[in-house]
Amino acid sequence: MWKFPEDKAYQAFKILQIAFIVVPVIAGLDKFFNYLDDWAVYLSPFIMNLIHGQDQIVMRIVGLIEIAAGVGVFFKPKFFAYIVSAWLGLIILMLLQSENFYDIALRDLGLALSAFALGKLSEKYGAKYN
Image (cartoon, rainbow, N blue to C red):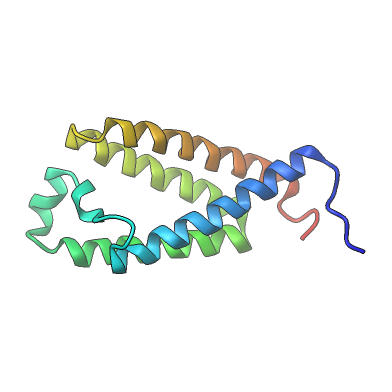
């Protein structure tokens, strides 16, 4: 019978890895359907001026990037965890430009730090049990 390793740090690694596979893929898919939210409302005024009303196209591109990041965390967490962390950093910068979403920017800071922690844990556990 398969037994989950008792190493608590490894367990934390797997929990974070699963979270950063599932959440980006779901959020990325939802950029196509807007079932969870109308994601375009989070685009900063600066970005909105650049895209000239093409917000749905931009959000679909964002969705594809998020899906790719989630799949990447599945296969290569040691690399893609840092990509996810940086991506969240860019989202934070965009949210801060909007002046309406400071609470979401703060939440995303926690997510960015968690993704960074996954990257650090991946350096030790990324291939240990896979």
